[in-house]
Image (cartoon, rainbow, N blue to C red; front, side, top):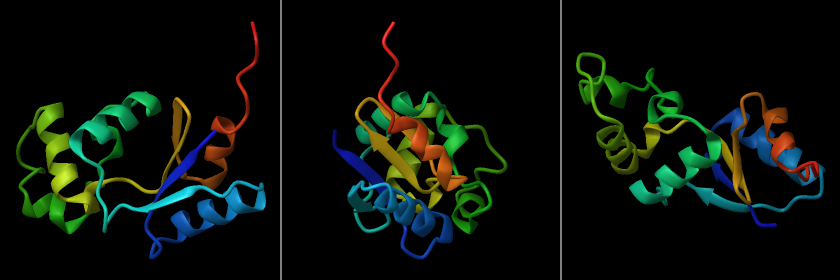
Length: 121
C-alpha cells in the first residue's frame, strides 16, 4: 500500500508525523504541499478519505485566511477547496493518505490507525 504524507518540513507536527511513520517502517511518498499543492480534485479526494468537510481542514488562523476575507464571508465547499488549492498555506498539516483512508497528524499518533488493515467481517 502506498502511503503519502502532505508535509511541511517547517512544521513540528509534520516532522513528528513523518518520523513516526519512518519509525514504524513506513517510507511514505513525501509531498511538500506548499511547493506542490494538491489540485481541487485531489483535495476533494483527500477530504472524502478523511470523511471531513473543507472547513474542517482549513487553517483559519493563517494570515492568508484573513487576507482573503474568509472571516467575514461564507463560502461554498467548492469555493473553499479552490481557495485551498490556490493558497496551500490554508491546508491543515500534515495529512497522511494510505489507500482509501486518510488522517490528519494532530497528534501524530492519529495516523497509525489508517496503517492497520481493516478487520474482516
